[in-house]
Length: 302
Ligand SMILES: Nc1nc2c(ncn2[C@@H]2O[C@H](COP(=O)(O)OP(=O)(O)O)[C@@H](O)[C@H]2O)c(=O)[nH]1
Ligand SMILES: [Mg+2]
Ligand SMILES: [Zn+2]
Image (cartoon, rainbow, N blue to C red; front, top):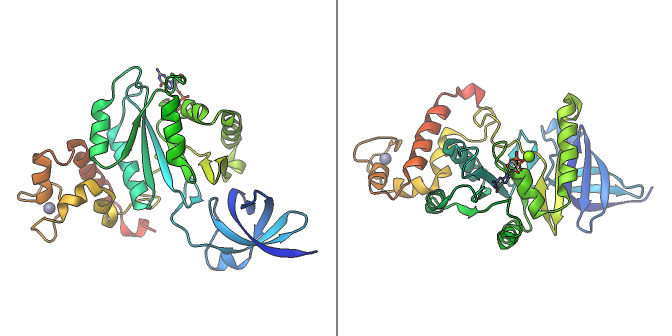
């Protein structure tokens, strides 16, 4: 059978079978080269791969390109943007969970786009101010008012264009509503996947990306943020400070060499906090997360 080498991206993986999409949108069902196992390397959804392509649209992955990042749960690689959704109210935003997610994204070298939804029921100007001041791209919207929000939806589509994005956020904040408003027609497909996933253990390993535009993909797993950040190595104590750039910025001037910037008197971070340059809630999250990460035993930190 004729074969040739092609490049593509894994858009779906199910127990050893990988759906690879090439640049010109051809789809191949591939298996992986056996030696990956020896190298302890498993192809992941989102991977850019080289593969031997056969005429019957099957293939054989021979090389995995270097990853920008990788995650265990959901099992994906090369995530460009975490789209974190919170509601201004109903449910009340949990800023600790939010800050933890922004840190995970930063640690993985991914961007954050914060969407504050349900602004029709409560003004979110103060929240927006906090997050803009923390250097996080923030947009207020209301998915319940689709017509009035068209320019905002267009702005979000532009910000995510050409990227691999994942939505995360608590249940009920409006993720599905936003997805439907952004990409009409996607609802059915994501709903179908969610049902399959909830049905049983055999389908939980499915991880897939939906193409929503030229080179633009949305992950189907709203799992980010619901997992134990520490257990999945999504953030380490060593990487904590640089995962809060808004705090790290003021840590450079700290006169103490081994400072944790938690509460030390004379610490430059504490000074910036008192001066209102660092947001109080952001520093509170930093302190709490420091405590959480500190508890982890190194041997759990695979
Ligand atoms: N008032 C208001 N309700 C909204 C808005 N967006 C979503 N909802 C409602 O909030 C509930 C949860 O929305 P859903 O999209 O299912 O949230 P998900 O669990 O994050 O996917 C639904 O009843 C939506 O109609 C909004 O902007 N304003
Ligand atoms: Mg939903
Ligand atoms: Zn300090």
